[in-house]
Structures are given as structure tokens and as C-alpha cells.
Length: 262
Image (cartoon, rainbow, N blue to C red; front, side, top):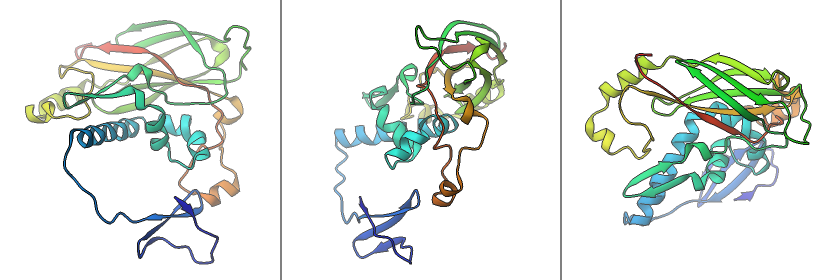
């Protein structure tokens, strides 16, 4: 990847053997791929399956990683899904033609804000109550920081912000989205062949249970509730958001399993 010197004319597309493109308001170029060998070796199939699973998972988690990884991605001239794939390689493994994903180990955000430790999780059907520590040992975190709770159901590809509360509250209660109809519809519509060949290999059986993975991100109070783009940032990249957010490392709270008849 090479930077292109500033020019009055913005170059995009292909010229000869060079491809020109714009990222974060700056122009870059790379050599054009002229040929490739596709022998469908085991290594190639493995890499393709892993890449597809990483991209698919990051697309499900789009709203989370935009909040949690935008700043880190911008610092490395990446977009959020590429940053997600880079830091979560160890969570994706390939064996016997199937990709396995370690959801509890996924990193959805990185940053300097103190993370939050959860001490209790109680679920009654779709209603969930959480308790957490406002401090972490000797690290006196800012009590004005905001804790964001996300519920993710990977089987039906739903990611939803279910609660946000100041750190000082030390507890939060919320209701999970009712996805019973989506689960039932998905189970009916998926053919047996498609189920057997899913490269995503989601860790859910195709019954009518709903598995919600809960993740938490803490964000500094001064960026949690305000627009974080300066005029210069908006001019530099109209499609990029949240690059100034100050967040914590993400926390996996746990998995809530609910039957379709709950």
C-alpha cells in the first residue's frame, strides 16, 4: 500500500497495473492482481473459511465494533471489520471442514477506560438483572462513565443495544428482544444441506432455543452522549464514525439461554 501525493484531481479506479482508492480522506494505490492459482488446497480452503467466518461475525457485531474499535482501526488505517479480524484470529479455528468460534474470547473493543467487572447475573425468561463493580481494585474509575450492554444472537444474526447506565449505578435490569419467531422461521426454512455446509459453524443447535451472548463496553462520559466528529473529521471521511470515542476493553458477561416457549 503506497500513499499518493496530493493532487487537484482525485484518482480512483484502475490505471494500467495500479489500483487507486481513497481511505480516511487520503489516496492510496496498490498493484493490480494479474493472475492467481486456485488449486483448492487444504490451506487455501482453511484460509477462505476462516476469512469468511471472521467477516460474517464482524458484520453481525457491526454496531458494537463501530463503537469499540473505530479509534483503533483508524489509527492503523483500517476499517472496523479488518481490525476485528486482526485482533480475534485466535478465536477462529478450522477443523474437519468447519470453523469453530470461541465467542466468550472475542474482543469487541479496546481502549484506556477502566473495564467493568460483573458480580451477578440473574435471568428470568427474557428479563435480566446484572450487578457490577463501579471500581476495579485500586483503579478508581470515573463514576460518570457509561456502561453499554449488547445482546447478540448469532443464530439469527441479531445484535442489539439492550441497556446503558452510568457506572455509579452498579446494577441494571432490562428485557432481551423476543426472537422466538425468527428462530422458528429460520429452523423451518434452512434445508438440511445448508445446515450441514455452514462455514460459520455457529455454536447453536437448530432447535428452538435462543442463545443470547451478553457483552459490555464502558465509554467515557464526555463521548458517550455527544457527537464525536469534528468538522475536519467529517470532511476527511463522511462515512467513518466514532473515531474519538474513549472506551474500555470489552467484557463477555455470559450466555443466556431461553426456550422458544418462554
